[in-house]
Amino acid sequence: MKNILITGANGQLGQAIKKVTADYPGFNFVYTDFNELDITSEEAVRNFFSQQEIHACVNCAAYTAVDKAESDEEFAFKLNFEAVLNLATICAEYNTQLVHISTDYVFNGQQNVPYVETDDASPNSIYGSSKLRGEGAAIGFNPATIVLRTSWLYSEFGANFVKRMRELMQEKESLNVVFDQTGTPTYAVDLAKVVLTVLTKVWDIPGEYGGVYHYSNEGVTSWYDFAVAIRELTNASCTVAPITSDKYPTAAKRPAYSVLNKEKIKETFGIQIPHWRESLKECIKQL
Image 1: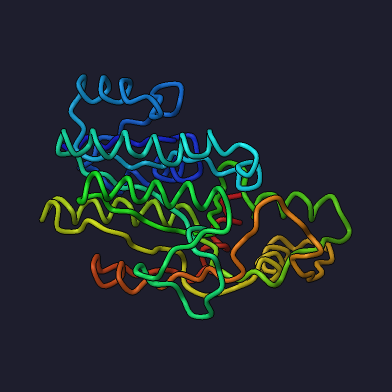
Image 2 (image 1 turned 90 degrees about the horizontal axis):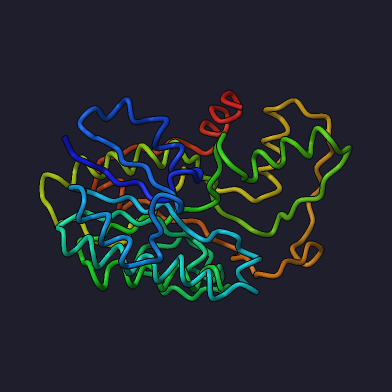
């Protein structure tokens, strides 16, 4: 039985992992959030690892308030960089496989073809910069670390675009949504399954799979088209209108194009990825 530590267990991905654990009977999951384990404290992490055997750690914890990070830089870097450094260092000491979740926001969005893992990262925001530093710490201090970059995460859990749109469409007659930002929505339950599939592979050849991988659902869309799809699946009567990003100013600049190329993860781990529309249907059913 493999003991898998899940940090940030109350977030979207942590809750999604809880949902799919029945399909992975060989794993014993240890769920923690900030109250159970302060990963920003090296001493707390070290004490935790000394008290129980952990075979793998999936770091779902992150500072994800993209706009707030612009004025809260210190804490964003504390959670997205320093905490990751603690986990990477101690996982290396205990020969524990680390899987760290990152983001499409490490790219500036100026490209017009899907980003591969080796493309230059040049974040537009404090959030993206802090996540990029976290990636560097994770792999730099523990080369066996698997970094999974994902994008536009949503689920039936927590706060996210799908749930917010669904609520607003019940409250309002019309909504404006930006159409000049392009990417791919990712259903957290799909990502959870991929994380655990990756772990089952890693046991076979420890240390051979370290590096960065991209994962999102298949397909490409804009936030506007994503909202329209939500409206159609929820049978909402709300009108959705497309607007440009300059009409909806935010503290943090978003990448205009953040489509991820998933060939590496598909070929390495032999996974099939659902289209975002199919996964959205499943999420709406759960809601």
